[in-house]
Image (tube, rainbow, N blue to C red; front, side, top):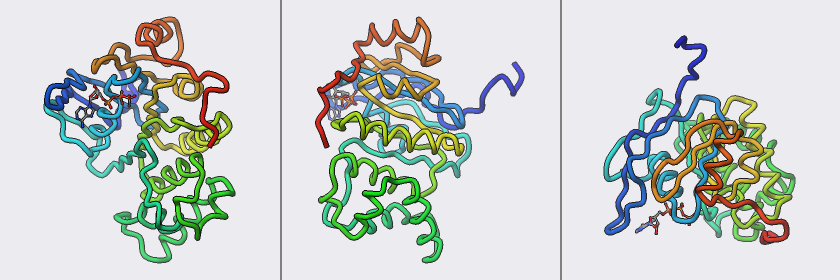
Length: 243
Ligand SMILES: Nc1ncnc2c1ncn2[C@@H]1O[C@H](COP(=O)(O)OP(=O)(O)OP(=O)(O)O)[C@@H](O)[C@H]1O
């Protein structure tokens, strides 16, 4: 196969197994993420999605297997579930923390904050001085993403970016992801609900009980079959929490 027909991989998991005392959360998971791709990793409750996010993001050393990066300098950023922000710190301070390690001088950091704010909704721009705890659920998710963007990641992994958000806010989050994708960033969304992720993703991995049960294009009969078999849900109109 020529290199033109085989997209370059930026991140791969090889034979990942994760055991938490008695629980086998991941079993021999092998997958690869193409550079510049928009991928979705979907699966029902307890499928092992968050565990895989932690392993791919380099936050958890798995029981067995390894994570490979195309190059050691690729910046891979995990936006965790639950929008873990520093609630008492201001929005600006939270962004600054995201830039820590990006080796920027003061001016560079100011410029980076401006770049990140330019793609955030106005409500974030207007809340810079407020403690993060005063943001709505959707704004917090945006800030978590903004904080990750401060480090100019090559790959962004998002664990359940739609969790608990009203549809209009989920659209906002995904629109920002689509913009970043157009600019060349590799995006991996890990979701329990298929609806929004599949509007944007071209590549799909379905996890079920710790195993990869599908790895291929995000559309088509085989993908639909795998989603059905894996009990991957869809967003129900009106079922979201309004944030
Ligand atoms: N720290 C832990 N200690 C023990 N068991 C854990 C731990 N974290 C996860 N598990 C278990 O591992 C399995 C996979 O969990 P994980 O959170 O990765 O799945 P998930 O697909 O993200 O689920 P959900 O959509 O419900 O968040 C579950 O059975 C879970 O109870």
